[in-house]
Image (tube, rainbow, N blue to C red; front, side, top):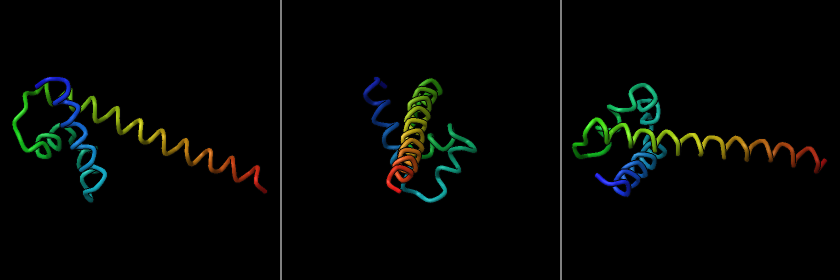
Length: 81
């Protein structure tokens, strides 16, 4: 599995985590097992770890962006009063 395939697999998992009810909670409880089930194909433990690292990073980036947007919205609201 090359880096592009890892990125594609991670993107597929991220999309499912964001769209399927309960999957994100399942991922938080057991990320590697959730990735294995979500992929739909066999991957080595090394590949699973690489995919996990990408998914974890992307989820953190999304969380930070969401928090920043909320903070900026609150600050903007303070100045518009």
